[in-house]
Length: 451
Ligand SMILES: CC(C)(COP(=O)(O)OP(=O)(O)OC[C@H]1O[C@@H](n2cnc3c(N)ncnc32)[C@H](O)[C@@H]1OP(=O)(O)O)[C@@H](O)C(=O)NCCC(=O)NCCS
Image (cartoon, rainbow, N blue to C red; front, side, top):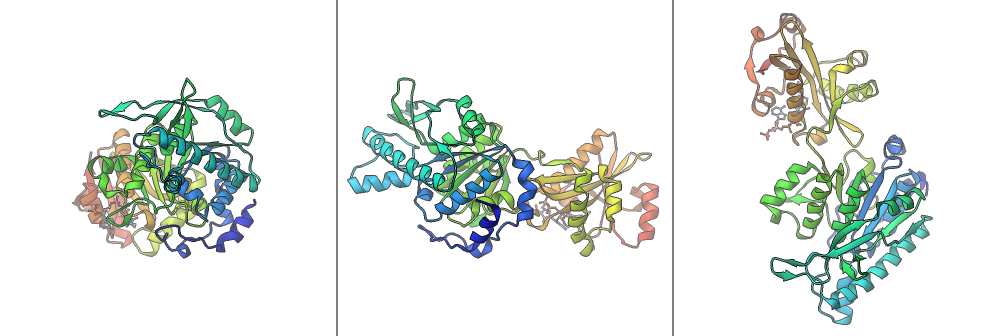
């Protein structure tokens, strides 16, 4: 499928399965130029998709398959792990058999394993058929070796399994042969006995083993929310803290995904996403739109901060223009940004520049001024500004500076309350800056932090 046909499909409506998904009209189709920017960035990267059984049964799954076809057309290597909870529950109801657990999180008795095996075969065929209908090569394989979970807190987990070994060589060969490995949550142990594995866990383990760039959970629920507020993007430490202190605040069925997202990130996967797969284009919007529509969890706090290069100059100029218009930043022409590009730090999320800061050095006085601190509106109030300033202060310290200064018209409280700066006056500035400030008429407040 080509990108243009993805764009055309943007009007197709999806029918909600249980609870209504958020309003589809909020989602804008990602524009082609936007997507093209990511082509070299994600080429040959591995994305592990963990697709809930309930989504495979949902009408919008056909569109998810189209989204996967777009990823493949961009040479992104896709591994698809599917769940079976929804189908297992349906089979149990239909056959009136009591099951021990539908989601592979608790114990699995033999009746449940039998139904789970039937459900897995069914879902796997459905997924393979869908991929094939979209012109995608795919296969199942025996690349996961399981082991018994055993007894947990005194309870025998019976036929519930954990991952014993993943056949990395096999998976990489399939991926190199342009083939999508489709992984079911039933795997054999050393002796060839079938065990039921939780598909989120399986996906997280595969993501770290295959050095995936992304682990993407596709569900039939909205992304993570706390107190009715969506968690759009958050550092892994924050999600870890929520899971430790207030797990009940997260929707029950998303807790396992949150836990495995954390696990995968701590094991080296840079990003994990939790998405409502019922939304048309959710997968592409999340990956190719800088705002995204689900929850993105990312690795460590400062990993997203880097020194700017000339290729960032236009983006820095463009985003800071918003600050210039509101008079919170002073004008710096594009030529000035380009000429001083080495003095900028930028905060990047998935290839999009979301914030910047300029460091002006006054060597004689051993001072550095942090200026042009700007965070794109969507990312404000998420700690990005504080991290940028903290990072700049750490760098100033490393360079042997004794003081960091900031001149601001509208954010003095941000510097004092959030970043720990003190309010000062003209005397606290280097002579050159003092003269300039007296002449430019901005009447900025002086803040400083002694290192
Ligand atoms: C000021 C700015 C850089 C802060 O970045 P941010 O990522 O939104 O801030 P953080 O998330 O790290 O910190 C949030 C805290 O800062 C406070 N804050 C943010 N902007 C503020 C402002 N202009 N004035 C006072 N406090 C502010 C928030 O109220 C919040 O406080 P809380 O933690 O007590 O609730 C950002 O809002 C921005 O780009 N503003 C426009 C440009 C600007 O004014 N730049 C400074 C010129 S040097």
